[in-house]
Image (cartoon, rainbow, N blue to C red; front, side, top):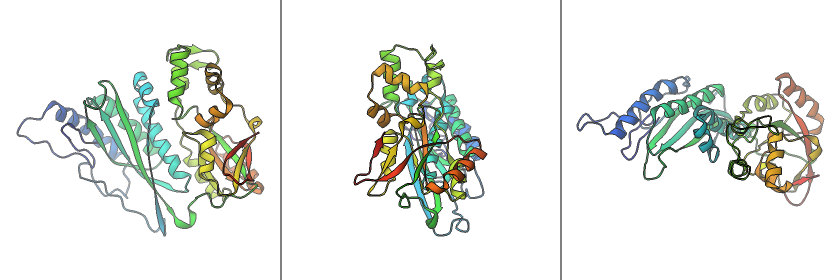
Length: 359
């Protein structure tokens, strides 16, 4: 997908032809090999709205204004962060790439929007075409699963910035929603119920602390089996970041939600206030669910206070829906029909300050 720099070679809205004179440099050759692998992969995500081919200066996408009258475009950007080095160490390049897409999808979906297309950035000291191919394969599979196009991106080779064996991965996504169906949190009311959907694990947040505790303080290795986790350490940490697009869509179609909150960096403590209107707070019942063993073990090793745990990790909750009290039964039935677990973990209450209250 992308351009390579020191000598930038484009791909997707990326790739320009290499000059025959002089012969291509090693950086050009590596980028060209990576780009060839990318072309066919990216096309697998194209739909009738994609009007461009791989190799131009930009990607073209036609907006369906019949399906989305009075459209509002929703955009987001994210990076993998501290989960990426561990994924690279374990060779889980495709898995962590899918995490990136799913994170962006969730940030789009909580606004009521449908993901349209995704752009990626891959930077490394030296491009490894096999790692690039695995990474793009993960992006492609996740884009297809979420019905969005991998429209373009950039591949950059910069030995002056990146360490020899490391790479960076970031993503950018655009979605669309009709203005009348935009979810901003303004509809949330006193008494709304907080209906939570579980995470697979850490998702993509809290990895700096988690790796410090497991690998430096406890001196575990990624391949070590730990009874308290009922798993190997690396596997427990690398569980995928879920896409909640399907349950979000079902709840919206059933007309049983006022808003959603994606529980990412900052945990429940910092993410719920992002959507709460003025004069309302979220009261969480800590007895409503038991966080998975991974979180309890991290807390034990680090002797971490409860407040810090809930402001750092998702504590086993990946998505929270704000549901009118009289529609909770219907909402849970909607999720049950699609084999999605849910827990009532609290409600919205009147307070001067927008915050999360634990009890």
